[in-house]
Image (cartoon, rainbow, N blue to C red):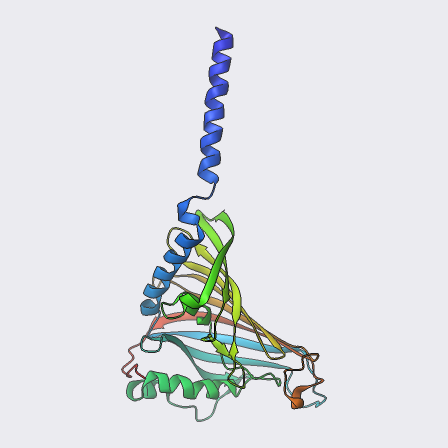
Length: 294
């Protein structure tokens, strides 16, 4: 009799171990196809939820390496801005419009009246104009004007998703959620980014996605633009006021490789590295009256 009990216990324990192993193993909900579909649905909704939202942005830029020998050239820069998050359904583009208020602790004199412009000018036109406006405060020689924390979400947008291939890099459980890390790589000529000459630039990166909800926790986008390797990383966190996950930290790393022959003559022989970090707070909604159109 004791022997039979012992055997029964062993069988039960073995069955429980099998069930536990099966529950921890990847299933259909964590397959690459399922996670991509869930994330794409989340982004489609998010494009509506995060539009007409403004936040405070505090950002810093640091030259880690620079070819400049000018002692007066800035090596660091600090900005305080209002960041307006909008999405243009006509062009399927995020428009993170930066309204710079302070540069290195000094108020910006005679800034453009962005709030008034939003009420009267097509938002796409505003975004294109103010990209040049906000990028004038960039330090270093590397040309860049696509520093938008939501840019990487376009990988999953309906108009761009077909241009990317996806693969799962791993599954983990964290804070009660099953997280899947998706690797993505762009193909074709209709790319998210273009270099200074207008040539297509293919990107790659990874997304940390909640398997059940499709929510994006973290996004990394990498691209080589001529001699410059760019890496953009956005971390998201929940915001109680909006009842929404929002960008919390956005970092940009730009490294110029002097050995590349594709870069223009004026930049040959240089080596530059720039690190930028932005933190966001005080998210709230605003009423945008401007027309979103082409």
